[in-house]
Image (cartoon, rainbow, N blue to C red):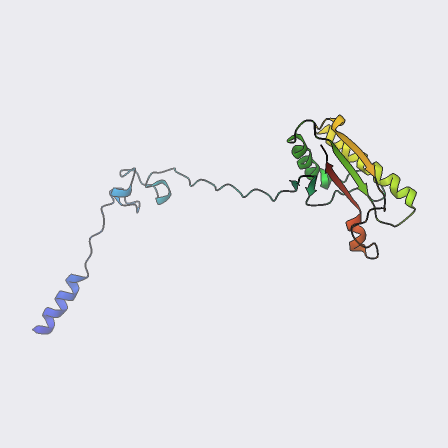
Length: 181
């Protein structure tokens, strides 16, 4: 008899009472904003509510404004041996134009072109100037006043890396955007 009583006590002690859910949507009526219409937890029990799509993180900045320059986080690409800007550089230059338009109107900007040391120096100086001029033209088309911009070509004369490796030569083939008063 004692064993039977203990078993009954255990069985009755495990019973639980569920919170009322009139519309049977799984959201208790006390937390349900629409207790008579089945919905889901996202809509606090209301039908047709869709969870908001989270905003995607902003892309990493391609351009940073420094005191004396625009720091371009990627290179400006040109067609080989040409001053024609490669279309994959358009987003970078669009960001550069936006950054320049955010500077005080009297700010002067020098676009400087550089090459590696392969080929004749005179041809490299000419190509670097043409590339700087192509960037100026692009920026003007994006709204930067031409009077604020100048183009300079330095050819191979100002390397930032040794020219004895392809990686070094690639670093030396660059465009710099310098900010003046």
